[in-house]
Image (tube, rainbow, N blue to C red; front, side, top):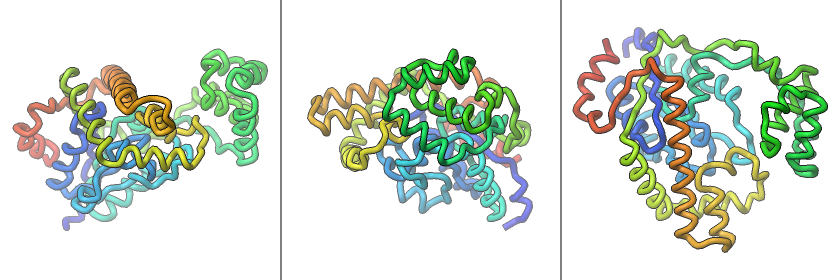
Length: 312
């Protein structure tokens, strides 16, 4: 394989859930000898292959994939860890002579990739354990009052019910002696320079996107989603962990526990998906203005031109 391939520009592919971005990434990867690298905050979790629509084992056999299904559900994966992991994955792809293709629907991950993250120091294990224990014992509103006394700036920015972010702010102020707001004001180093990437965003008509998402979730129900959720529930994890907040987990857990009927659980999960799509589309409009828009309906007919563009 030509060694010059190591220097080829990474390809970034974003888009809302169910837009077809993963299939688009596969088509490109097969054309350019690419490695597909995950930029979806939920597809990192090992326990959630079905519910997060992770690439299938057959897809993973066709094309190398990285950063999929490698994190335990008990672990709170973060954008900071993503930045380190994606830099390593990009380096490994290039070393192997493959073109990095970074695909996902988590806007913050792309922002971190192209703009960097604030250089917040690592939190000591004892501090993290203390505040997470306090969250379980005292609850969000009490911790918010605690944050108000220690870091009023961050307290004013956070809702009193947002346990995860309140705990994070308390961890940072205790561990570093500085407000999280101060750290967030500092700029980090990007992993990639935007000008040295090729960036696509896949878009779909809203009504069609909703129909696709609804159909996909219905399919998940016949493909093992309930088994995943039962296994997750058996772990008795903190409900504030990211994996426990994946779309569909909460309503399906309610069904598993006999609190609601199956149809109601599916309807709630589909409604969650539509709300998530709306947030993704808002992010895309605000932060991905310079990205090349690919309409899913025209994708197949445009592939020849797309291949020519990315290989020029």
